[in-house]
Image (cartoon, rainbow, N blue to C red; front, side, top):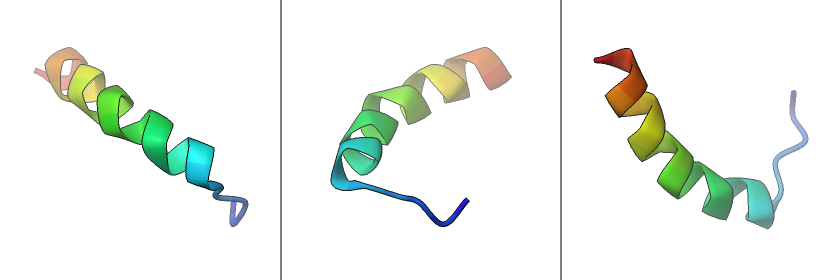
Length: 24
């Protein structure tokens, strides 16, 4: 998956927070 766009990066900022909460 080398298809990383700017939107993906921006969307990953809040997504990472949710992922951390879900991982805990």
